[in-house]
Amino acid sequence: MPIPPPLDPPARLLCGPGPSDVEPSVLAAMRRPMLGHLDGDFHAILDEVVAMLRAVWRMPAGDVLALPATGTTAMEAGFANLLEPGETVIVGVAGFFGARLADMAERQGARVVRVRAPLGETVPNAALLDALDAHPEAHLVAVVHAETSTGTEHPLRELGEALAGYDALLMADCVTSLGGIPLDAEAWSVDYAYSCTQKCLGAPPGMAPVAISPYAWEKIARRRTPVPFSLDLRALRAYWVDRPVTYHHTAPILAVYALHEALRCVLEEGLEPRWARHAAAAATLRAALDERGLELLAAPGRELAPLTAVRVPAGVDGNDVRSRLLAGHGIEIGGGLGPDAPPIWRIGLMGRNATGAIAGRVVTALDAVLETSGAVALA
Image (tube, rainbow, N blue to C red):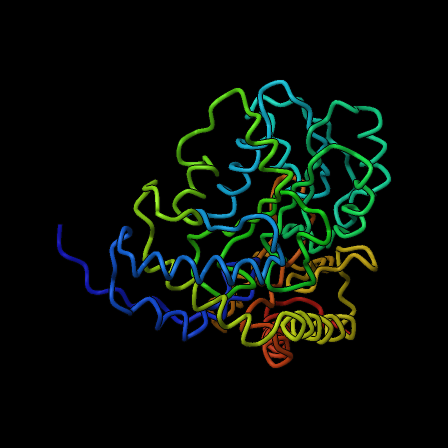
């Protein structure tokens, strides 16, 4: 075959459900000298990443590390370590990723109790507690903190507080929340939380930060069945946290560099200011959408700042609009996810893209596409 030319991908403004645009300093960090995964100087970098992850997760008493994988793998790692075959788990399902939680738990051999809510809403915490009362043998409650498929935010803090009188662990999907909205894993009694690097942290895909509480470690220590080697949190901790290092895998060195710089940027900005910036950008976007008569999928009071799900107006081809935005304006937004998804656009303002200026750019481009697509002009 002929040798292709060097890569020259087109420039995009990534305002979909992820990945988001990468911070320039994060890209620059990946050009720094390569170290070996057993080099003591690299282990010092891991120590710094762990310290910064503790601060970003707000998990001082437990452990934090990053899997060399995506958020989906971190989801699977949670069930693989916290559940054994035949155990019961309560799962909140109000979107694509809640359904994925339930599916993964079943693949682990667990008995899954699904507690459902309509798309655009969140599963009421009271319903989760009712399910737990009906199934006191349940070892785990799993919810999606930030449901990327619907643009909704689960009241995770309130759920953690409500579970204080129960023995069940709390597992939270924080893929689209870490670094973008208020999250305090230890104070909210979250026992296992996982995220990714390519959304609000502003780094490339490929790493999955996790936080594990002391209570979760106690459950893991009592396991009777083995964990898949690559997902074994104890073995991963022996490489990431324990010193001297115990070899587990060849770490993705440059991805670790990227995570290091992304976390440094988050902490340099400050968590509260960063959360406020994401909230302000979302408010700007939603005000502009409201002016145009566009409706959100998320129920009032449950809107997720980094990701806004917008109902496609009647008579408009949502996929055609997305294609025109990409081809004509270089802007990527998402569509509905999963077979049950209604016609929606999913607009992400994450990381460096969480600004009012970017929100305005997306809406201006959306106006232009709708005016030229044959659709009725929006109010």
